[in-house]
Image 1 (tube, rainbow, N blue to C red):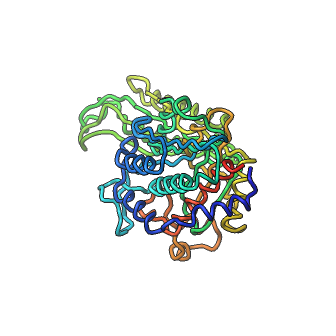
Image 2 (image 1 turned 90 degrees about the horizontal axis):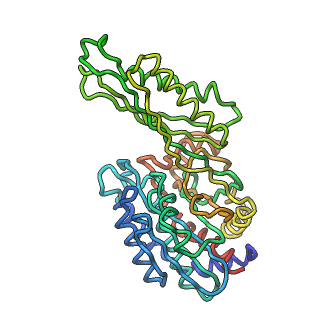
Image 3 (image 1 turned 60 degrees about the horizontal axis):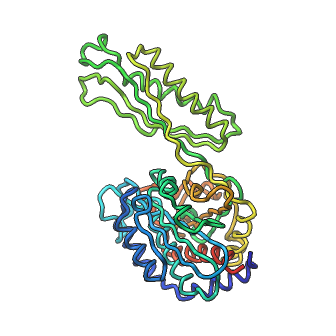
Length: 414
């Protein structure tokens, strides 16, 4: 790796021509036109067009809507930079002049920023290719929010069709006073699994419940009982979250339906804890259905989502040192392990190191107005990812480009 001071100096030189207004215009356009998972056609098209203009060999339609740009620039390592592109089914409430124009869909997780950062970093590195050597691969990933985008890109042959990475880098916008770049060596994000449950009952008229087996009541017992899984079956030292995010049953007040459906999400950081919690979910569901006399066994379907995100500790330390050199010693700190999840790590072939960090983005007035004095108190009091009020400060546009450029240069200038 090149010395952090050298990387920082070169990064400043390469990005000195960044135009905040131009970055803001591109970002705000993406924010106005959000697209859901695997529907990112407009976003992908804009990214692909600009990458071609910068000299990249571009492939569109990877895993339906993904974009991969390759810039071969002599001998050297292969560096992958990844940015995700999809938005969320959230109705925006920010009141911004560039708020979403698509009803019920919003870039509430900041992937519009991710695409902006990725593109600007790719263009800056392409314009300064005389300063580095190697191959840069830019990955515009679809469907991170749906949990299947990275897996779909791998299934579509991304590791065979494009230069195999020697290292993979990614970053995420996050709440927190703008101007900080948290790094966590080792485990940084948790595994996530979705679980679908179908409870089979016997439907009938609401006036004759004795002639039915009510799946609504049974599913309600399941929801209540599941609250004890983490509280009574998981050690306090283990980090586990079990959420029932969806409960659907029935069509009318006087009709007892024939089935009820639940959608669950499980977050874990330990494989054994994951297996224990999933087994407990199955046991609770089957037990409540048996107690209710359901006419058929319940259906419990586990959808494997995202694995743990585990940064290569040595690599993370090196990139953190570069970011400290760029932005100041006080701007980089270890925020610790989070129960959020990402499919980013699936893009790294086995044995390939990766690093994933954060760029804090809360406007100073919003942060100062948040209740509390401690960092975590303030953190809990400001709009975060997936909030209809999530609105990153535009001051993070240029720094977010520099974090990616400097990470790439740490390897490409070695």
